[in-house]
Image 1: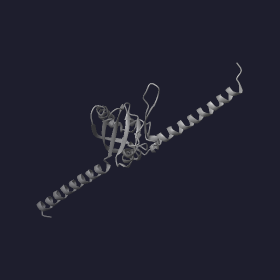
Image 2 (image 1 turned 60 degrees about the vertical axis):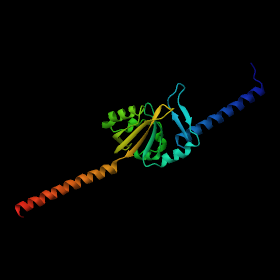
Image 3 (image 1 turned 30 degrees about the horizontal axis):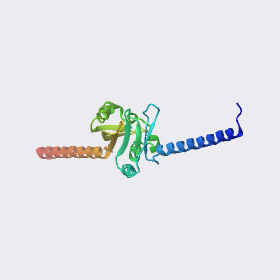
Image 4 (image 1 turned 180 degrees about the vertical axis):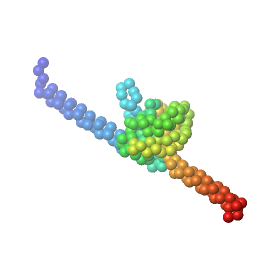
Length: 196
């Protein structure tokens, strides 16, 4: 079968168009991964990952979430992070673009894995929360309060993670202060009794 010049040119145009569309798709996926486009990528699906683009009205909500003091993430049923805000990335000492696709369990302190799993599983039915510790990629451990709740129409949950390190530090200082006061009172009482 002999290809005519017309068929060759048509094929070449099609190849150029397909390459252009592939380049555009790769640029879009890169922008989604870097949070430049409002979308959620879910690794689940028979045909591979699914992309859910968000309405432009959701842009305001996403900007608000990015500015929160709490860490926020959207997780799939297996705990894969499909969205995260900059505060969570900061807590985990990980660039935001590298947060997407990670499994949340990799950042849970070993001693709290079982507790987290209970909170996580319950979050698919109703709001669930509790205190656990997370660890950064540098190994720093951070006490946090985590809330997990289901996402309607998507197979996943969202989590809100509040850093408790300052609160825990204040509690430790308060306890130390109370113990110091008790010791001082005991010392004063001892001095009073002995008359020195």
